[in-house]
Image 1 (cartoon, rainbow, N blue to C red):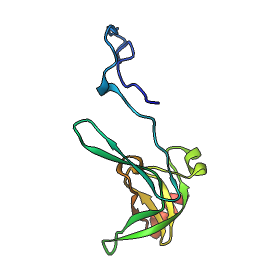
Image 2 (cartoon, rainbow, N blue to C red; image 1 turned 120 degrees about the vertical axis):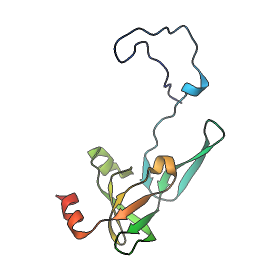
Image 3 (spheres, one colour; image 1 turned 90 degrees about the vertical axis):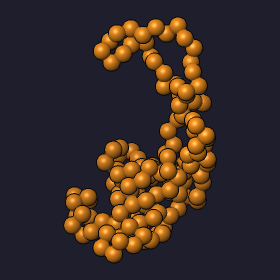
Image 4 (tube, helix red, strand yellow; image 1 turned 45 degrees about the vertical axis):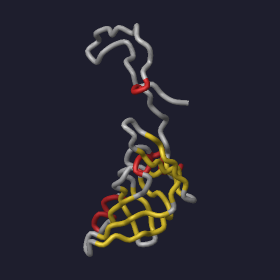
Amino acid sequence: MSTWHGEKGKTKTGAKINLAKKKRKYELGSLPIHTKIGKEKKISHRMKGGDFKVKAFSVEFANVLDPKTKIFKKVKILDVLDHPDNPHFTRRGVITKGCTIKTEIGLVKVTSRPSQHGMVNGIALTTDEKKRELS
């Protein structure tokens, strides 16, 4: 099933829109993908113009940047700790941009969009930032 991102009948200011045209292919959307922790599962999706978008349904590892040494490490994701957007995502274990995850090397803040980039990138939090995130 897909969603439609076309005109709905009125503009933001309230003006009426003529809906006498059919739905167009470029107005087609898709349902949101909630990336979870688990065995790697990705799908490649063709976009307009022939480009491809990799969507991650579940991920097992994250690419983490250590801000002190400026080195990336591939580490295993253990749990989702905090989700500023939606507390239900924390309970369900959904990973999106901005959430805090627990990894083998400590707490990490996610900086990528896993459902659209196909991977989890993040920055390791320092002790001061950890206290701020958990309080």
